Image (cartoon, rainbow, N blue to C red):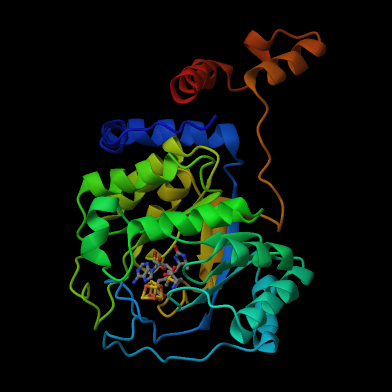
Amino acid sequence: MERHNWTKQEILEIYNKPLMELLYEAASIHRMYHDPNTVQVSTLLSIKTGGCPEDCGYCPQAARYHTDIEGNDLMTVQQVKAQALRAKASGSSRVCMGAAWRNVKDGPEFDQVLEMVRTINKLDMEVCCTLGMLTENQAQRLAEAGLYAYNHNLDTSEDYYKDVISTRAFQDRLETIENVRKSNVTVCSGGIIGMGEKLEDRAGMLVALSTLNPQPESVPINALVAVEGTPMEEMEPIPIWDMIRMVATTRIVMPKTQVRLSAGRTEMSQEGQALCFFAGANSIFAGDKLLTTPNPDVNQDMEMFRKLGLKPQGAFEKAPQPATIEEEDSKISAKGENPRWTRPDHKIDRNEKARARTKYSN
Ligand code: SAM
Ligand code: DTB
Ligand code: SF4
């Protein structure tokens, strides 16, 4: 069950638990709602790169910063189709198209994006867009074109937001999310850690996300990619432990959501990523480029999946929901056996599962 009344204090207490306890709780909750061996794989496609009028302090695509990315006009539908087919062939079930726009403007470019959505949809892949701020009517039009998800990150806490971006407000982000929610497109919203924020800001961001009702269907957790030329170019990389704690805490407060281990994986060892999957991450961006910055090579990721026994989730495939304790017990009883002794995970897990359920659902 989702809880929509998490407080910053409660979330900080979870984040700061002894690591083994935090991992155990997060992994137990993860198993109640998701198959722990399945990971959703998305491919990012920057359909319009650079030249953005906003001043997001982390972003290499803001026109005002002097980064050496190559800007591009909006891609053609054919180019997008070719890239989507490539992504599908390499095991992705979702394509996420990003545009360096402040907001969507009605007109020929938006019509072209709608056509891209229809085209990818016909390839039997989930389509996601991240195009900046959106009106209710635009969300509706994207929904009619077959959009599966819309990504719009809160990025950080409401308090720290003003230190990161001045050209739009936290409230604007919430409004766009609300507009998406009014359509039948699923909500993808998360943020970035490693931008100089306090632990309170990480918790504050999770309060803002988890108190949305319903909670976002997916939550990307990015580690800042410090790009030369941006105001954040000199930020120190975060320790892997922060990522693990953030993923675990996100999993605990948003049990049903798909938690995406997003930007920053090139800096993480496979062992570090494995702990993130154990802590409840069940989605990644694959492909050697995010929007403008590097990401691990697909073959390297598939090799990691093989080593960890993970399998990519199919498009439109909901991760199987594990049976409840009562359902499992009644199946065992139907065979004339005693669930108390037959259930394989009985000794270790039974009471823990029950305790976790009481604690985290209301
Ligand atoms: N322009 C649209 C917007 O801002 O909503 C969509 C594209 S924007 C690049 C999507 C998200 O990418 C941002 O909200 C931010 O969370 C993430 N992002 C951008 N630059 C990043 C960086 N250097 N490191 C980590 N995440 C980053
Ligand atoms: C998200 O949370 N992370 C992705 C996606 N949503 C759009 C973007 C990461 C961008 C990292 C910097 C870059 O490559 O430009
Ligand atoms: Fe523009 Fe989005 Fe980058 Fe902000 S994050 S500068 S809105 S592309």
